[in-house]
Image: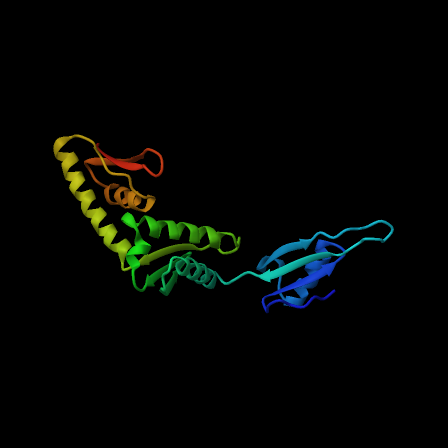
Length: 211
């Protein structure tokens, strides 16, 4: 049974069961179950002797393309933050790299990149709601992540020399997962030191110790 379409990428259908209504909707959209989001709007009722019965009602909506889903989500969030940003995307394998540009990007970065990391985290959660969108999103602005990586790699080299000379462990300040990963990667093949993460978020930190 047909109901007026609310938008081109979705439709609502009635049926005696969820399965029947869903199949009708899939036919109307010309797609398959794996490519849609199914929402049961009304589970219906059998009634008594046919009195008070009503059909099942479902809405079936096409899942958004991965890149468009990311763009739409980021546009909504940044506008809520009072920012008007431009986006450049570059997809490589299973990662989508998004570069944001505009005014007041320092607000987007936050202290030591915490706001940027939080935005990246919630964006991945939002995209992950669509089970078939197996895409890791990496967000950057003003080349912050590259500049931060360079700073951390320099720090790692300095700490390595200090630990090697003093034979004493050094505990670094709390860092994000990205920052800790840079330190670990930088020193993983160092002949004189080893690294390990200790503590709980948001105070988890790296300890550089002599081998």
